[in-house]
Amino acid sequence: MDLKNTVINLMPAPLVRLFASPYIAGKGIGAGVAKAEELYTKLGISSTVDLLAEEVFSREDVEATVQIYLRMVEALKDRPYASISLKPTSLGINESEAYCQENLRRIVSAAALHGMHITLDMEDRHFTDVTLRMFKAIREDFDNFGIVLQSRLFRTTEDIQNLHAKPCKVRICIGIYREPAEVALQEKPDMKEKVYQHVQLLLEKGHYPEIATHDEPLIRRCMKYLDDKGVSKDAYEFQMLLGVPRAELQQEIVKRGQVIRLYVPFAEDWKYAVHYLKRRLAANPAMVGMVLKNMLGS
Image (cartoon, rainbow, N blue to C red; front, side, top):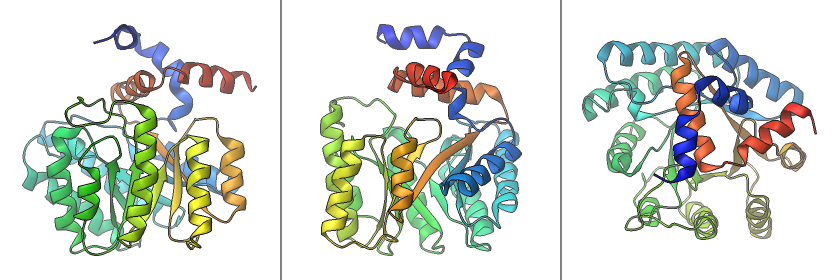
């Protein structure tokens, strides 16, 4: 572990929450719903709402997490600007693939009744195969189910080639998890180049790319490609994280008539929020400066 990660891991939870609080809607479903509504009514920005809960092990805790997601579906069902994201490690994958898939299916089927989209997040490389298997099995029966792929992994081009035959929404991003050189790119410029290539491949395969990046040059490069190819504005969208100061760019995307969607996490237990925030700080230490800028209104 390098010095940067050591320092971040030693940071007390209250300090982490202070510096990274703009990146979380708050505590409880109500906070997530309220933030999603605020973003859309005031700024025209869509949301994907997520419960921060990773590495959940006991059946009791998994079932509690499932129930929170089912309540989220009910709370968001009349808000077409909001979708939901979820993670295998919070829904039983630590027990078995079958158990996790059963829980995913419960949530996706409940959302399908309201035409609500669900995105299955991708975690580190140890979960890639099982996540894709569960996604493909459930996608067979439900059209409101999408997946995340990470451009840093060497395997992603092949994974796109082997995605479900039915078109689906695919969030393409660099990925937050540090992976070894034998399975993943190590330099950010290379990862960003792959995002650009993967957007093109997803479109060629008939999928709906959700271009998840804060990198303005990459966004503008994708915009130019999409415009030059005459791709319909309802065939893709851009995604960013709540709290990252990109307001002008986000509003530019809205004015272009394109969807910009923010990842809006909330917490029921702050220990999961702190874990999420530490990972974000480790991946991007400049967050500290961004948060200070937000706090000072400059």
